[in-house]
Length: 268
Image (cartoon, one colour):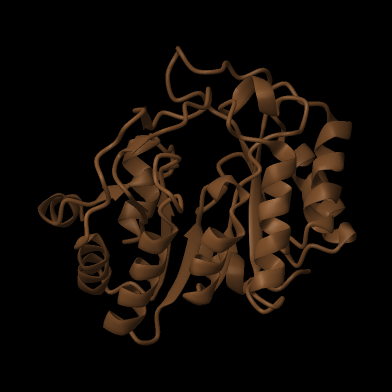
């Protein structure tokens, strides 16, 4: 898989963000494609993706290359994410739409999940993505409200992320499942996590991921505590009682980890 991606000049968030599940996922022939380059205009303290103020412009043939890679990998479920591109008028939303379209043209029965930046809550940009009919729309809130200005880039905003999720729900006419995720162990309290889960549910989120934060390097935000499996189970139960349809809550859970399985899991 590594050679295929290099030949097609594609990036995966698995490598760029130094995900701890890379080995397992690649062994399962799954990957999350990262479009719009390999450098982000934002600089969050938890993320290993490179930061640049003026990244290279979007590549017109990137959607074709993603579709070719997915077809050669025999994928039936594809996750597409991106760096944040505040330098682009519509935040790169048109590239998301083009990738969704090309994937569905090349692999007629494919399911496509998108994990998008906030697009600065631009409804026009969100509509471009939603109109391309992804099978799941995901935008991560990342952390609790108090820690957001400390950990996320100054351009990110907890309430704006909730606004994005709610707008996506309405634009999709409540037919496209909405997903979001939290990292824990950053210094939040249990009460703050419960508040965040209530906020996400109120915004229309149906699918939820909760995972242990692990700093990608020593220069990133330090881990404050390691959460026990029992605590993850407790938050999963709490979220299901709130009304989330599907919840993955465990130390190594990430936003796109076993995404197809989570989408198809019935709550129980």
